Length: 477
Image (cartoon, rainbow, N blue to C red; front, side, top):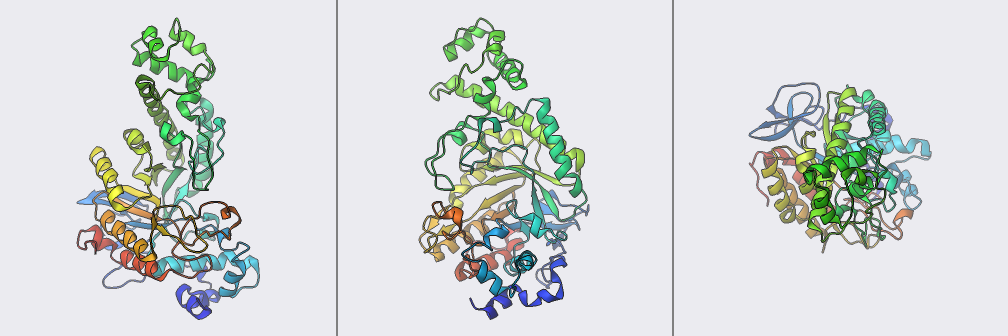
């Protein structure tokens, strides 16, 4: 793409006008009028000054001005991906800058103009908000707040990261982090809500050894909360919670517990004192599996209750998304009744074509009446510098675009579906140092800013019709 085409696309020619501080808004047209937050004025609700959700025939997000809002967001704006060794010079030339100090402000404007061109109206949870929200927020965004560090994509997670969520120390930790992160944002109308961990490792399936992760490496198995807490010392709050639950499940009969675990405890008090008594789980043991699942649910309930109360203590105004739950494992099915006691939406991640996701969406929708957002997913196809992309791999850009269009139309036509946050904006090719031996993430631009035209046009056409699709007035092509 030459400079003239880039300037036309991105509006970079207007940089000298100081537009980087201008609030983001889509152009008002007769067919598609939006408020300054991207809310569609064709359907009105009560305005509260903050984003919220409401059910009226179907679930909707509602903009601060009281207009219907369906979130089509984009993830993975990480400024370093634009100024890596392999592409920094190209972007500086395209943006007509010579000083790296001018890079982030100009890139910020390029991002907003690109979102406006293609119809993205939200910033997903995985983005450099320190760049995009300076000097002030200009587009609805999701704020990450990570109380626990057990996200699935990390190849190295210490056992200690599975904190004792029953402890007073964890309560203090959550309170401190919420005060730091949530208190300054409590009056920000552009904030959609708070999201916690990225696909946390909850279940045995989550924690098991993986031969091929997002970064292409083998990942050892993780301990998980049930195994971690049941093996702690007797004075730990987590161990006490575990023993209390086991006593309840086995109706106070320690011999029945012994029969399950082939142990010889003479009392539940003896179990309380036992340290490192069962470091592994026998997955063929149905009662042990049941015990771990029930204890996991108790752990997740405590975690969510503590985190939710901490955020609400400092910010009562914004949505609570909870964790981005892993839809490609059994996590959502396991913890859905627990997490949705506290969250305003079901925030999940799943990589898969619509027919795969439909099965799960149908199931979840029958279990809980709550709006649903796919917080991070997309489709991909192989390119020269993208030999091993992450996600469902299409045979061609045309097929990639077809899968994208199908998911967009059919998902947003569902009455509970209110958001899709696309992964991501530009390719992360082998030219990035951290991607040389790893898998790559796809965008609808290559790393130099050249769009994939078929995919680009598909995204633009879909976003243009989002409210017609949401109202059931436009079916998938």
